[in-house]
Image (cartoon, rainbow, N blue to C red; front, side, top):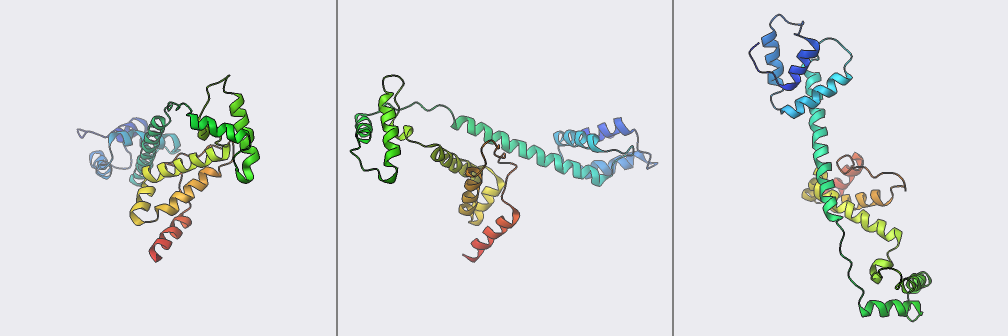
Length: 227
């Protein structure tokens, strides 16, 4: 058989041998090759690995089975590319940022907070304790600005959720679709809520694998259509 086979068909030929379902092997393989012409070699390799790992029959898989495996491989590779791009951008964004030294105004503000000279409302007692702890630690560790020091855990989680939701809307196909159709704000708020409410100890899903339920997406699109 002179026709060059793609990687998937070559591996299937190695495992199953020449197809016994036909007398014209060349024409048989030609039909498979034409059906798979839109897929690149890397997708064919991955599809073959997935199909051979799951299939329990000794006969050749049908063209439909092969195309289903190829579509799965294409989706998996696309998801991995999105995830890799997200991780690369996240690594850049999380590079250490040099701390700005506290100014005289920062120090005075902390001193005034610790002395109770500033009305800080209902959370005044807690902020005063933070200010006292900051002032006490000046001689023993690098002193940070008041803005950084008073950031509470829930505030940090809120900021991280906003950043995650923003990156989701920028980097995923669904985010781009929402921007084009005018319901990005709804999607951003839902993504932010998902991240913020993720239970402690549970890993947040990769952006490439997460999206709101379809009925929520349909609802948001309907709201925009009626706006």
